[in-house]
Amino acid sequence: MTTTTNEGTAMSSAGVGAAADLAVDFEKRRAGRVDAGDLVAENLAALDAAGVTADALGDGGQRRQALRTVAQGCGATAFALGAALAAGRAEAVLHHAAVQLGLAERAYAVAVERVRQSGDAARQPGPQFAVARMRGSLDTMTALLDRQAGRAVGEDAAALAEACTAGIFLAAEAEAVVSAAYDLVGADAEGAARIGQLWHDLKATPAPVSGSLARELVGKAAVGIDPDETPRWV
Image 1: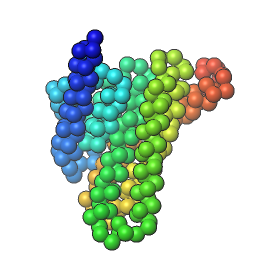
Image 2 (image 1 turned 90 degrees about the vertical axis):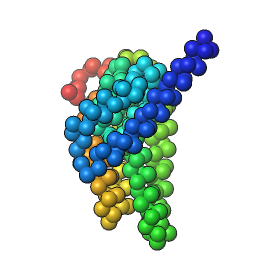
Image 3 (image 1 turned 30 degrees about the vertical axis):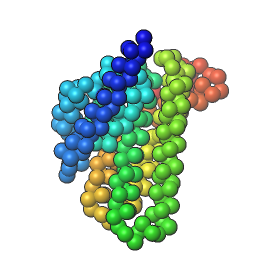
């Protein structure tokens, strides 16, 4: 039993590592393109060939980590992969949120790199405060996603509401981080172009559960109302 567990962990770690290597290539190949377009199908095929599959990514935590990693190379590919890996609606919501987190993490990394390279700007309070707020948002998103994933067990309404709690928060915070990152690098054409890609991916793929429906499900669960009771968001 211990051997099997160790082998499974090794396979999962290898899958995340392969995703990280490919994400670097995905970002390079997309240079200059706002929309990933036909690259998504090619990227998904490369991930499958490299063993980044549901079987290799054995547990939810490894899957979400792989999605965050792939998102930093191509968010459109990560959203498609997340939908394919999801076993149900609650997991689909968590996967979507993980991709949003990955996009925000990449935007933060690009912004910090550009600020460091700018010299004097890095010494100013404005950029420092903006980076601090972004860092706090990323840490909070990570903690909430992990916590809600542990609560969103199963495929009943309660599990979906737990997943949607993370989905609601991460959607708003990811947008805030990417927007703040863009503001920091706005005068840097190369940095702005990369963050523009991240923003495009963040907004282009609809969530598996809409924001209004997610709020309804979470609110009804909190006050003890049947999720199917009217009025409903459709």
